[in-house]
Length: 462
Image (tube, rainbow, N blue to C red; front, side, top):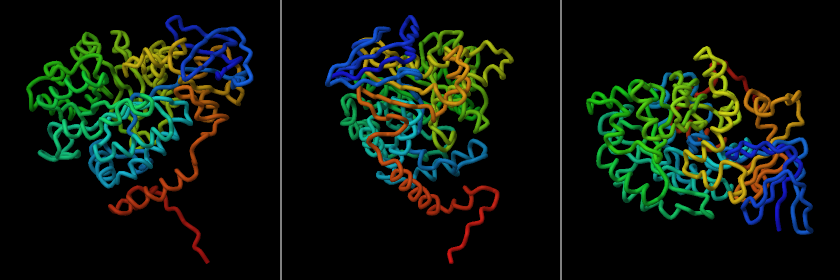
């Protein structure tokens, strides 16, 4: 019994970057067994999906998305970074119960699925939220790396001695979530997520190095997002942020550094020399006013850069298609050079380069025989797609929106078809999320603060 994708414009993202029109994919037992230009007649027990007028892509990969922030979309608008963090982000997340984390996971996962994402990395799942997020991803069927939030110190953005995560040591925290590693048919993996680089001390660094070697995953941390982060490391340790990480033995292909805005030449060189990976989140950097990451310089040095949406409090969407558009445009303006970040590179960032960053390049990130069947299909027949001379340019620079996501398959199972999730009660999830979010916001006295500055007049009940 096979699932056959026929007659589509197949963008393989294989090493030769073949584009097949028309192309055929054949999936058996969750694995791609054929990727070709040959038509394939389905048997009586096969499912044949006619992809005429559609683009068939590897499932999109989001390497930085805060799941739990989905419950607070729109609750931190137009605020300076530290005020955003300390007066909205931390207080709201601290009020979440374990079942709130599960609900946020369903809401976030639903949005990612509807926008073509099949795999993501959450960089900071608090211990008390971990099971709820993992349960949600298992229910939805997405592939996910969940980074357990760990701290060795306060970091630049906390009061001295004050921590967000539990008082248990990192070994106990990791033991409590290890049952989720390689769960859900190996779709779920446990990563480690120190909140920021300035919150990593030497004992925590040693623990993380050993732990991820055993897990076969990696570490991810917010890095050089703002000047305060870099200054705090210099103040405490007397060296630069990248030099500090290298001294701790944390730079390398097992490390994903997110944001990486405040970088000097020496930082760029060290990241490239050690094959450290970068998560680029343009919408978050823009909304919070934190600046532009030097992505063209990193790419010129051969650094693996992949895209993330960040979270619902600092982006307000988990739509990776929109993130592609921003990443393709903003650096051209910032560098006054239209040839940087070309469309093809942007597509690599959310497919094969995203898989490389996660260490999953042998399993996902391209449509090749033997890889797992994570597939996204976009409908090219709608308004805004014609004329279609260069499909990749249309995809990156504005034709693709969430509305054109037609079909999504993860691990050989179709989870979304004709734009509709097949196994989720979307209205119930959204209704519960609205109710619970309002209760949390009201409970800490933020209802007035999060409303629009324009007065909304509600009709009184008679």
